[in-house]
Image (tube, rainbow, N blue to C red; front, side):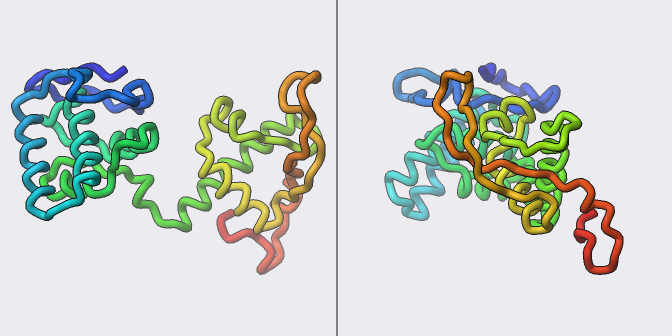
Length: 218
């Protein structure tokens, strides 16, 4: 769980935070730490801006709650990470990120997340390479099809569902994997068998060297 910030406290080192543990907190129920002076001033400034621009009350509450959670735990003496804000949004349906990031960026209080601003081609290339390496590892040196569930991708390889989806699509588009359906056990052998997509890797296709055949990202 994040630790409350002290006045003037700056970031010692960056690490990914798990905001899901704070899902459901409510500032009116005193579930959050007290605001530092800088954090309180930032919340007042944001609330004034939302009222000035006549945001819808529900939208205003979502963004107000988002900023309250962030600055209660992290303070406002150092810029906030864009990745933190979007991670919080993903973990809690009652918060919002986009307009808050714009507000913070205008005040020099946002550290951009490079992954959100990458070139789209670069994103799909990196996803494809990540999935290729994962499938290669899952083959365990054998020539076999691989079933890779979203849960295994997250727990074993720290893959987001988006990276898994984009990577597999890109590999299939370049014919580096083939996809077919077959019955797969969902866990232990007594569990139900269901039809799932399995993937057959084609590493020999990486040896193609004829003009126009090689994938443009290798």
